[in-house]
Amino acid sequence: MDGLTFTDLAGHRRPRQYAIVAGIILFIALTLGGASWVNQLLLKYSMKETFAPVTENTQTPLLPTETAQATALPCPVLSEQWSLSDPVIKQNYKVIQPACVYDGLAHTVAWALAVRNGYSREQARQLLGFSELPMRQMDHVAIPDSADQPQDVAVSFIPPTLDFVEWRVNDQGKPAVAYGLRGCFRTSNVVGNKVEIWGGEYPVICVVVEDAANTHIVYRLGEHIFTNEAVPTRSFLLFGYVGDGYWVWLGTQDNPKMNIEDFAETDNERLTVALLFDSKPWDLAWLQSRYGMSQQPLPDGWQNFNDPMEQQIILDELINGIMVTP
Image (cartoon, rainbow, N blue to C red; front, side, top):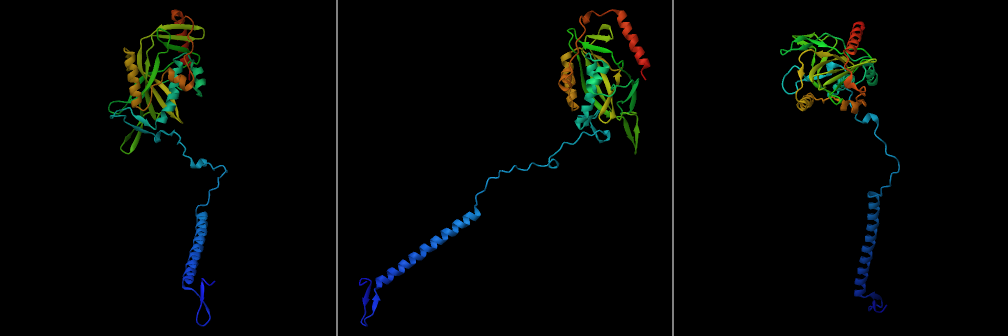
């Protein structure tokens, strides 16, 4: 201890000066070390509270409820809710929006296409799920003229005989009929503050072109078969809306009818116009894709059924069937 202390004149021991300085320095060092240790503890505690590890959630996440999911709106079946507008320029025949309305029309066109490809009227009705033949026997239908005024046009209808069968084919026996939309119109006019209805029970009518590029028509009724030659022809069919998404074939306009000269040009024009009216052509490929219905097999030797007596028997039975149909 003599190196750290000394004895004063009074005989008391006193710490030497450098010992005092060293003690002060040691005290300061211990104080700082203790403060640092405390700060580290506080920092660790703070980090533990702020950045607590996330435990893995093994529970199955809740799926959104059906009410939260977006659902597609149903297609409106009330024709008053449809919008009919000009496709490009103002004209009598309009585009229907929403385009889902055309699904019901296409369903009836499918029936017309099926009966042109070897299905009987009744067979096509059953396969396509109609409760009755989707057609009407009418002589005239009112359509708008160039001044947007109704005018009666003569129409013809196909024989409604349930078991009557026909094929529209080319020289090779291949199907040769296709359809395309030409537009639709309302069968009423607004005059002043009044609505004049001139379309009867059909609030909307659509015009559909039938391109029958066939060169032969094969008819069969029971055991009777007859094959007739045909000229490729474009005709215009009228379909009326009944309601609840249901359309019926009102007949084929007697005029105009046009001979088909260029098949490729006709096909391109049918596609272009159908797209213009927010639709697409309907042909046998579409019928097979949409409803799984292909052309029915032709009778063996179908080209050779040309007995005029057979033709007359078929015609007589069809006429009798029309006369007894209510």
